[in-house]
Image 1 (cartoon, helix red, strand yellow):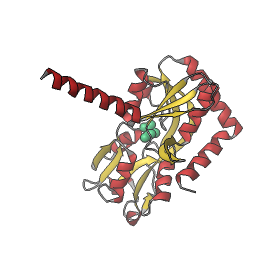
Image 2: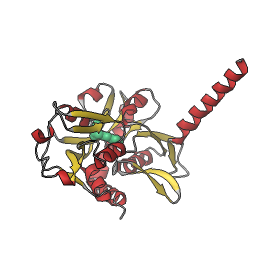
Image 3: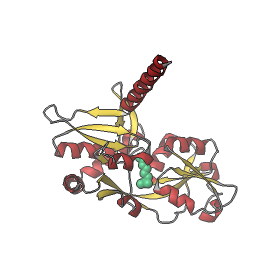
Image 4: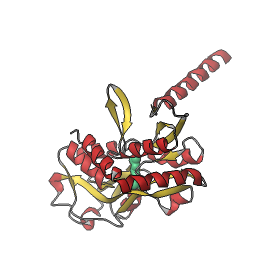
Length: 265
Ligand code: ARG
């Protein structure tokens, strides 16, 4: 009995290690760099971050990964990327499992209680993604705020808070954006709240989707880098990198390049 239990435990440990390794990606930026800095992200958010096969190898790519590479380079470190569900990221940071988080994350009061944020590196607005066939049907907040309507948003996101303002509608909160987009395409939900660059990306890749012709609540969603509370040393380097990327025009170039990469051109 003991033996069986022990081997079962070993299998469990093996599975745990195997699983935890499979979501880790390494980027050797320069052979001479000293060790790694670890980024936490949630790669379900093109063009911010998404999985892609690069030269036969599965990688995470996107705007946030490019910025993370610049941050790592400024520290003379190579980059490790840990891919997790969006709602796990701040906990991982707080527990020291990752050094910083880039995930198209908007600095909110609530999050600022747990972690520290850099300056905003990219501004986007929130939109409502619907099926194109319904574009003349869902033209206002009220047209979606009905008991027959199902509105989707990502678990733990600011879009979830926006979805809550549709008090009469049914809400569906799901961990990943591709799952939500699939549900929208298949008519299992009527609307999905996401940031505009993400909506644009799906529209260019999937036929029949449309951005509704109205804005909701407070549409602002800037993205910032999160670090463990009190890690001002790292935050200073990150803010300098962001300044440099913005003033040199490199940020615009990265955004443009990643939007193109996501649309497959
Ligand atoms: N900007 C939104 C937020 O901070 C959504 C970010 C979702 N990011 C992701 N990688 N899925 O809540």
